[in-house]
Length: 603
Ligand code: GDP
Image 1: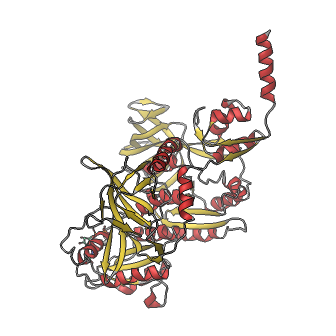
Image 2: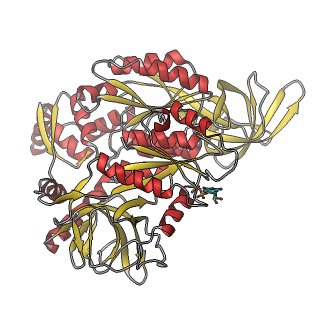
Image 3: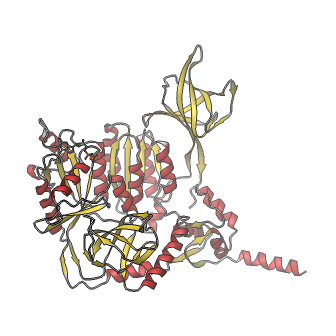
């Protein structure tokens, strides 16, 4: 009787579902199920419909939890508990600044490979070591400061725009100005254009170093024209962009470049108070067998002294050794200076913010809390914008701009897409094209999408497997299209919340063509090696050559594993494929297998 009575109570309890629930993060599926009085399995199946594999103990982001709650007719309010670090951050932001002074500019060198970023930086460093320190070996600690005529500039050693953007994705916007290095003999190249897009997305001004000016026969006007085409009209032509002609070989123009950078500090009115406790970012960190955790910190503002208590992400401690970028021990360091320190409890991560505190116990408590949270947050994925959730994100006020990255097979398509997609802006949502270029989708594109909450559109192109994996782990949406009006139509609909239950493709696997055989009366058979997933007889297929989709919507006429017909061939195995109605397959072509699944747009 008691059992039956208890069961009865349970059933009654399950039927009374709360209309309004308050929770505080991190939220697991189990917590949510208890709060909403809905079975975990029901929540999991809703998540699976959205392509999110979850277990009962999995932490889900508060946005996802809120959307799930709406599904079950409840309103979920996720209360955000402020962390110790957030409290510290607010305190630091509110500090009174009585001694504001100009601080030196922080610059990063970006540009196409081999255009001279490293050489230029080396030349700048070797020719601008201050008196008394002359002959000192410049240390590579991830950043450095150069001084001349009592002026200084700080350089970050960002090896390219991908690292620059990866830091930004972590919230570290350290760079005040980008030095875009363009070789005069080579001109604007694909990575130059990418670097421009990445700088713009970060809203960082650009100064161009027109490098290798010592080489004979450079057509400077041609490069000026290319720069102007990409919105960097040189000031010599009446435009807004400073172009400094430099040579890392002769040293020509380097002083001029530094003066221009120093001028940016004035233009941007970069000011800081060197008397308040320091804050800034971790540029690099490593574990040294002799010294323990060693970190390069870049001071954004304030004073850091030997013996100070520092909190940096999951690490804390007292500054034991303090060195400047020349490797010289110093007692104190101030705004815009990169320093190397030891004395931390742990190795912090590049991009972590650091704070100089007066209480070691508070630093320890905050570091421990950060450690705990980072363990949890590896389980939570930040909700990136996708076409499916765009409308709900617009409604929730999370999205006011739809950021897009466009990759297409040819420049003509890039131009047309840029034009059409920009025209889709409405009063509620502005469409912003962060980057549009011909060629396959790159890792840099995915990082840019992550840092700027963007969707990537591939028109007749894909990225390699590495890129697809990276996008998947970061939750970045890559949409593939081969008809222009489909893109505009889908974007328009998703902005208006009208995207219907849709057919979406799911990638099954990839194979690379290693051999081709001409077989009479059958045609060309491709001898393939399955590099990931499975090759399935029933799948649809696209043929990719150099990241360009040559043909989509192909089907398999026959699939053989050795001599036998196969339904599926798995990763690491070889197979013979005859593509239906297509014989122009070549060695090194990639075949991507996919199937079309119907996805209900419920969340
Ligand atoms: P990064 O890939 O942009 O860092 O380019 P590097 O600094 O490695 O330079 C690539 C090549 O260009 C090297 O062989 C350099 O010696 C050469 N180089 C760099 N700057 C100049 C320059 O101003 N003039 C000439 N003639 N060669 C340069």
